[in-house]
Picture 1 (cartoon, rainbow, N blue to C red):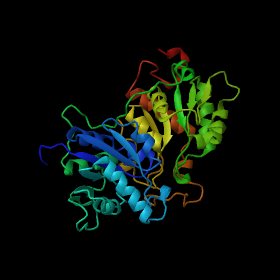
Picture 2: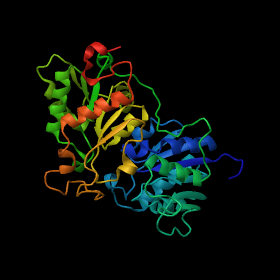
Picture 3: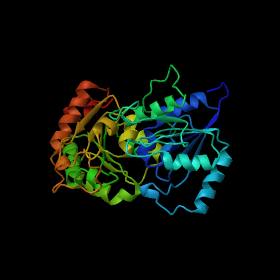
Picture 4: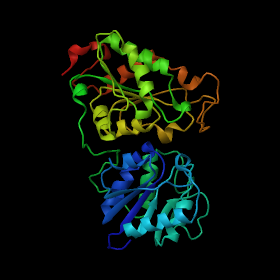
Length: 366
């Protein structure tokens, strides 16, 4: 690369958590660019708004992404060309997961006149990529997704500054709702997941809330606007208890959710976007992880994580959206007692002032 600092487009076109894990790569690009445009799909854009180093977020629904599939026609091509022209892009870094190809987007970037494009591709890219990493050769397959994205950025010539530890991180632009702050000590239970194959059963979540309430540990149940019925069902596990249980389903922005997660004693969450958000704010995490995708790549990239779920189950690496095994044993076999034990192990390894033991009750609040 020359001494000229380019205007760079960083692309990650899929979901909220997928964009969050690009954070270190984005910061590396920002360290060597004059301007960073983050190109995201509609689901991922709210996560991009939380990432340091981005000057502008552009939303574009890619025809080849499951959640945004639409016909590829001249109007879509014109829309994309106009976006690239408006951003005055000098080069692009295309970030993808292990099962995705950068080549469809690389072709559109070439057609839009972008002179330098970098990405990781199993297929030979021809003239579509100037910088190519080969997954399984010069890019290891079994590395965490944040590291994968960072290696693509590094291959393009962008490195983190020496004072950047390379961990997930988000801006802290919001505070938790007053009713959450007033709790002092609390646990977050996030019952939702993007697909059923990654979901711990609702009745297990509800029983967990009841168990926490019996122990005197306040619970905050979180979820998206589309998960309000689920969070209400789960929060009802604390009905009749004197211990507070707050249902925040659909009531927090992503920035507010980050603040809620940051203040939690422990976050109980499946393999879904908020797990990566919890990692980005340094939370202690009980990860209810279905092995339909590899934990080595997608488990929360955080210092204090307890991974639960049968990682050798028959659904392993199937990338199934609906559980292919009757009874969903990889996660249904995990009990609320297992979660409480994992919670206790996290407290033993990384105690905070607001509670050194799960069974110490609300009296231990700072």
